[in-house]
Image 1 (cartoon, rainbow, N blue to C red):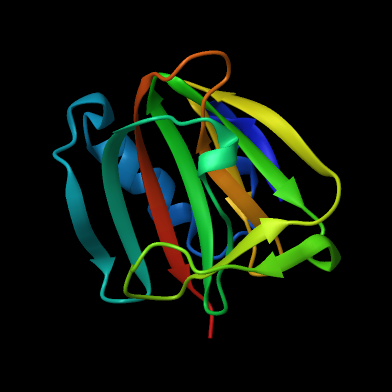
Image 2: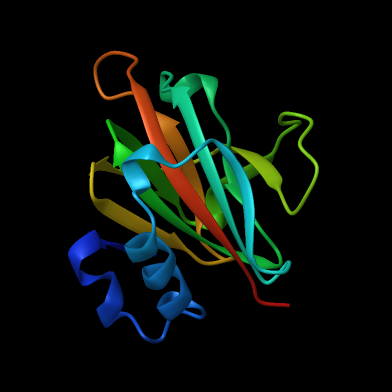
Length: 151
């Protein structure tokens, strides 16, 4: 997992497709990106622009992915994202979402970080994460999740 300021994303050359992500963000007025999915490099790099209300963490599931890295960039608002060691997960029936998702409930300690506007996180397939959590009250956030296909 990586957590950093968007101003330093270009320093992470070890992240696959990081150059294309930086180019996409620089070429667009990302605060005004339309909601929805955009294929940047076919199915190898997709930008998913979303807006939603955060929720109490108890209402959300941890998730993992087999074939994608998530680069989550906060465009406006802010949310708590949580991470947990995969040894502390119990499989759960999550939302009916098509794609590379596995859902879990925690069965052990987890860590939380607050991701504010102009910050980003990177979750690798082995990083169980729970985004979308409210800090003290539900708030509207807008973010773009770059799905980087790795296998």
